[in-house]
Image (cartoon, rainbow, N blue to C red; front, side, top):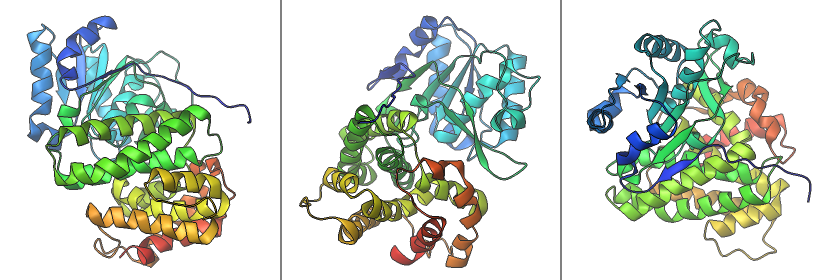
Amino acid sequence: MANSKYTLLCPVNYGCGAINHLPELLQEINVSVPFIVTDQELVKTGIPDRVSSILKKAGCSALLFDGMKMDAPDYCCTQAAEQAKAFGADVIIGLGGGSCLDGAKAISVLCTNQEQNITELITGTPFRNKPLPAVMIPTTSGTGSESTIFAVVSNSENGRKQSLFTAAARAVLDPELTVGLPAEITAYTGMDALAHAIEAYTSVRPNPFTDLLSLDAIRRIMTWLPVACKEPENMTARENMMLASNFAGIAFNSSATHIGHAMAHAMGAVLHIPHGIACAWDVPEVLYLMAKYLPKRALSIGQAMGLALPEERLGKELGEELRERIHQLMREINIPSCGDLKVTEEMLKSCREYAVTEKLRGLCGAPVTDEEIAQALIHCARNYQ
């Protein structure tokens, strides 16, 4: 086996009711002036008010920023950092889905590096000063951002998703915060987590630790995502989905995502397709290609998905079986098709240049060609009706 590397970045407080221990967690890292990054949709659920109340009872008043938008636009991060700096924040709390978590990590960097603009930082310029501590509190089970070094931000100048590289100081994974999450958001974020696990397992740099986490995440998602969508109050489903998301995040942080996320980023930037939907469309096509190039790994994925696959089931036949199993899952959890969203093959073709030039595509463990990526984009529309 080739030399490999795996990393554990962020201590995680996990379990039902873990959010109630947030004040003690802040004491552990010696901070007391929190700035909470969330969005207006989450405010409607009452969760940000609950978090603020927990902090207030502990004598810790927080400032709430509810202006984060989908895909963490750079201008939202800059605006929030200015407010956090004026407030005197010494910790940034990301509360919500992936955009809020990634945005919070970017804001933690901007707060201590205000002489550098965010465009510089997301295009590779190293930041000069240590970021403020960032605490991640996910309210969806998909992004895994609490356990990755990536803070994905949308660059408004070039329309691309790009990353700052910074890790959170702590994370709170409380499955109770995901109870009652609408079925469509549960489905979309769950498919993002599935994409993370599958791509981590088939990347250019897998290792025994990430393999273990990836396959475990796949098993949990295939079993519990349909239950979480149909029974939003089912705590066992919510617990398993939150663990799956976290495990997949740890896996792809040390391994990588690759062509699926390159295509999803392209669809998000060019066509403004929500990330989870784009990932759902990509997963079957990624698996089809992995069955061609990495048949033994594709076979292991299929077995983790619950398929009774003999060891000799390889190649095209395996790819078609894996693709159909994911399509079955997508239908079960009501993932919309390209037709449902009026996304045509011509529109998907317009994503080709972005997808093949996205840096992530080079992290695939298989020599997938530009043409195969272009065809996979089109097949998102053809194969899932």
